Length: 128
Image (cartoon, rainbow, N blue to C red; front, side, top):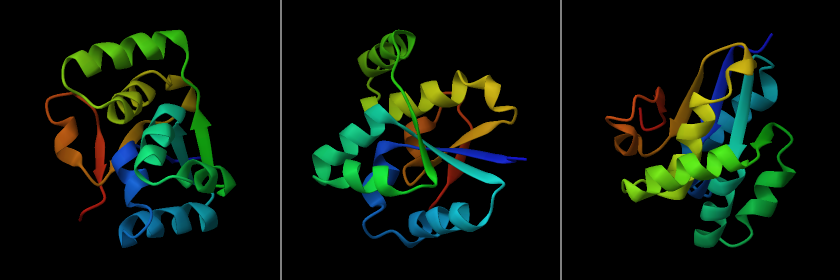
């Protein structure tokens, strides 16, 4: 049974190239079946703009599952972006809020928890 659903946002994916906490999270998900990692495709695209080739790397990690961007997600991310939220963060917010079929609560695992203040989104701070 999956107990922990963690959505990785664009800042966290960008930090994958050198942040020990992010690397440890990937490692944990590989060895612990109760943790499932999710990446919104828009977050992967935004991270790839910062580090070209990162999207391919993320796709090779068998413990990372993608969240597609459907039309309701596009509208939600667009609204959040108009409010000043970067698209890769907005996609993570939408994923956490709108995927109740996971059967467990989801958190955004992030290296930038301040981006979620006042958004009503549960966060797992990877800086601690």
